[in-house]
Image (tube, rainbow, N blue to C red):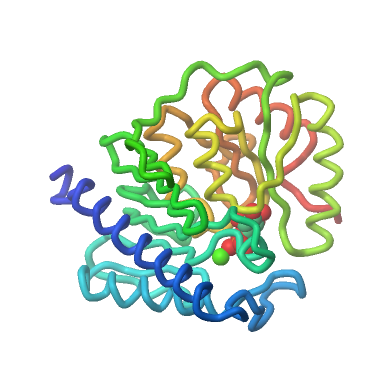
Length: 286
Ligand code: IPD
Ligand code: CA
């Protein structure tokens, strides 16, 4: 147990159990129903889609967590916020990378984090335990506060502890990023991209913020930045990255969050933040 009776190891186990159960539901749904990738609605814009699977997985995660931890809060992308009484909140993205899921691209994840503090305010929450599970590849990242970060490969080979080495210089860095769903924001993100691209090795737009951050923790990309992410996109992967020795920041001293999240090992993190700050990457076109 750590401070105030919080048990990161036990919470990590539960996070993994429910994330894998969500992944099983997705795999079973795809095996049984050729239409399981169909879009059932849209949210903030016509490209911000939701499928029946997003909703079914979130229902399953909520049921399992409410049963196991009735005093904890729940905050999920599809069903919103139900505050709890324990000081802990489970932050859930049933499918992070829904567009990839829809198109059959194997880069989406069930993201489950448990955080202390207020998950509705950037900088006011701290993750305690987390799991990011990619049901298509089987790759599963776990982390617990003070317990390191682990990757269980999808091929059943041995799990490995993640430990970041020194990062490359900015000019040699492979940088992941993502784009929002609103046209105005995307116009701003495209402008920022034209400023970043000449200064880095290359850019990747993988399509799942949690997998981007886990990619930084694993070393398959060197850094990640994005404006406009929600807490459920990043809460679990933030812990994976920090426990692997990386760090997160916003711009101009702000905490990582909706305005901007940048993740990398130092000093690449600071170098990328400087470039993004000069490009005003934390604001939208007026
Ligand atoms: C999205 C993905 C994407 C990122 C968007 C997120 P969703 O999450 O993480 O990579 O660029 O900002 O909204 O909608 O697939 O859960
Ligand atoms: Ca989602």
